[in-house]
Image (cartoon, rainbow, N blue to C red):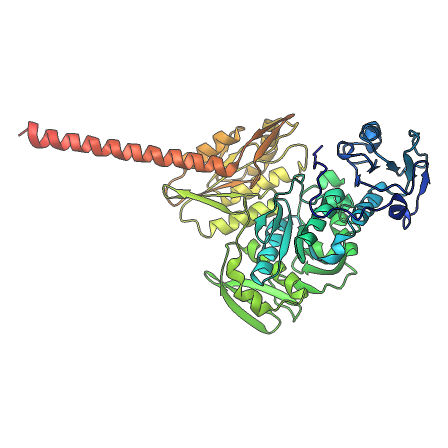
Length: 524
């Protein structure tokens, strides 16, 4: 479990009494002091401080009931469960029973921090791929328009384009106890707009319940996290929960699964590659290096700030969200040059005539989108390094192998985060999809060696894509975690390659000089 410490981010909570926290909620309470001032609300027993409310919810991996003794030792004033029979507690501790502990946790955390989401305009972005880029695009455009904005997601909390020094768990969608603390910090810092990532696990786990979301943006629905949700239908239902949480929805009209998940909702705006009416944003690259942005009858041409069809879709989603919030498309187009990709998304390093890209693509759709974009600008061969994570979504592994083999001249199949699985078994699953590929397929379970091999194999004009981990700075194998960065590893091997070339060139020049002296002097 992670630890946030006990220090408040901003000006703190509203010093709410326990009875105030409970008065609008169906519950039964026994014992303790209902007038007690609450010092915090959490579902992590290690974060409990004297006066905290501990919500003993049952999670996917752990049962909060097992952590009640630790919460009591740390000074919990109240224990909340969704069991009919409340556990026996020491005198002075309030036992509270609610219908749904996860739902209560989301509400109580919002109430404890004085419902900060109600003071903000919030964009929540969901989709199998593109959440991080789209939220970053929204934040960048808001900043360019003079609006103080925050972006919350996979890469942490960013305010006005700078990473905020907040200690938070490494999760795409923050848990309620952290989320509302961060939102209160944003309000205290003068932020007015927030763009946040809404993952399927965050939505199904009710992390965003009781958060006032103004605009829900649906990017796409592909193959990911099916195993963790119990199947594709459950995964789609989890994404669809955003419809009930958001005041207005903006959808990708090109994606039939998105349309299905948002069925019954009238989208405020749509985006996609097909033309539409006044409430539709379409961004195409009709001329190389330029985007054509269409909204209804209006048409604006701008220099392309980033590469890739998938990033045009992400930009279209950001433009549609901001137009929904009242921003003018012409103003957004004027500021489009500010758009840059986040860390680990098409992140480039170059040297010795080759280009190396690191990208987070870890689904078949994402891998195909990135390889398609890079193939269109590749003068030589595409060389792809990738693996698949362990303990999840085995079904996507051969499909990712097929995609890599279709777009690449050479593929290095390696480890991602194998977790408790045998890396060689994961690689075998991937290789099932490469059987009909004409690409050179190489197996190397050591990711560092695979990256080294791919970079050393490359020739001037080639592109090397290292996919799957993107910004991640660790690799998880079994019960151990070690520092590992694809980008830094690529930079190191590029540097070694260039140093070797320089040494070789120097040796060649020395040999040629020696030969010239001998031929021109000694023989004569």
